[in-house]
Image (cartoon, rainbow, N blue to C red; front, top):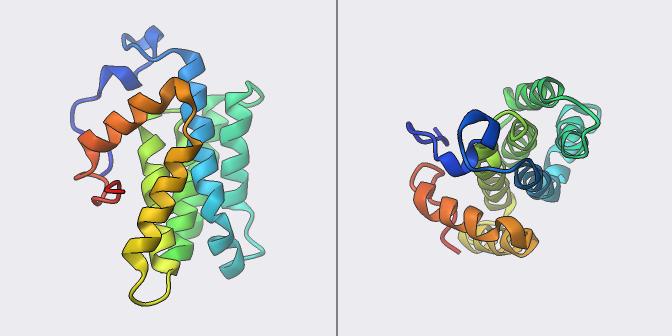
Amino acid sequence: MILPAVRDPRFVTLRRGGTLTDADHHLLALWAATCAEHVLGLFERARPEDPRPRRAVEHARAWARGEVGMMQARAAGGHAMGAARDLAGAPRHAAYAAGQAAVVAHVAAHELGAAAYAIKAARAAAPAGTAEAAGRRECRWQREQLPAEVRELVLDDQRLRNALCWSVFDC
């Protein structure tokens, strides 16, 4: 489980009674897509013929630009996660990262799912004995990509939900 039982109003849009602006929601989706794309090659090497995770990342970005609707982005995310089902390790986590990135259009708090799965993918792909260090490097890289406008929000979310997201944000 990567979402808390009670939704944080900072990740609920203004029109739904929260405090998240559309602009910041879009930035969260773009950051999640960046995190997922960073490890996407781990899936694509295992399944080069399967475009579903790549399409999910593209849909996350297209949604942020206003080119596709939330339902299209969410569906693309579901398809990416479907691509992961019969896989294990790094390819599976990379596909899940892509799926989580696309569903940020539906629920902004999935931004940590994309980042967490990307870290898990980096750990799983690392040579024996280096998984923790690889995960910390991926976490630090992700933080460097954070837009200034949502940086503190995401860092606080990581702190608050680290236990729910497999304790991967200790970097």
